[in-house]
Length: 378
Image (cartoon, rainbow, N blue to C red; front, side):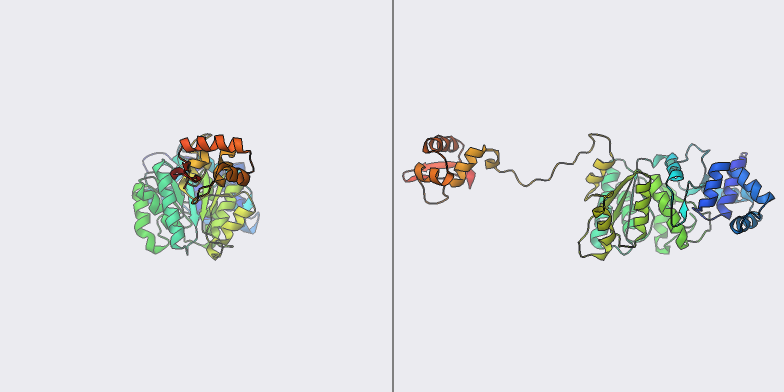
């Protein structure tokens, strides 16, 4: 490389390759001591514990400068807290605890693509079931499109089902979209999504805590989920079964006091059972559209959603007493004021004045035989 690389960056590259993504021990040690000190300690005295010994042994085979050069030749960069591109929202993970023994602020992020990672703070994560229904994928794509039209980036995991639909919806709106992977950014997982991932790497961004070449192990998905939640201002889950990994992402959002949202599905659908439970037990807000999401993540008074109402009828604008009289007027056979007053439970004089007022507005009409409903009230 032509530029000098800092000692901290080299140490973080080494630890990123030698340690497991999302490892609480190493993320905590780096946050407390600094990456350089952790590498020095492991090199000089690796026998503190079995875990440290394993990582120390891996470190001996890592040449971080060479790894950076190799990555750069493939269009991959390593982003750390010393970079202006570093997403500061990730630092909220330091106080978010652990889930499934994963947690903490990442040591660094490997990224492909021109999109700067510090621009994702106002974005939204959309995740959900791999075995999604057509309903779920349509909702996810439409929601991503709406968010995109309002300048919000969409972050997801490039998995089948909801993730893929979210990326597709964002691309259709021409908005930035980022895939956060559980494997190296140079790998396509699932393999069928290689065209999508290559497009994101060329025009948007593909991100991972795991180093280039890393395989998508199960535990790495659990570590990956916290990044999806941390990078964005809110997380939406569209279809998630009771044991869905998407709920893990939602829980990370709740831990960091992000906006947590869920899209309801049919109450008989197992693919929505987990979402419904999250909504029912509190903390997760029900959303049905991108507009709902915008209202929740926006500033005070922004993107307010109109309260849903049925069609407004002309008679809805009448005073209560006027409606009381109108309800007593027959549709067909006309009736006299005495009869209408009896049905309405009001005085005849009041009913007589009201009938003439309603007639001026077309709600009732007077015939030779009495009063009946007018065109405006039918």
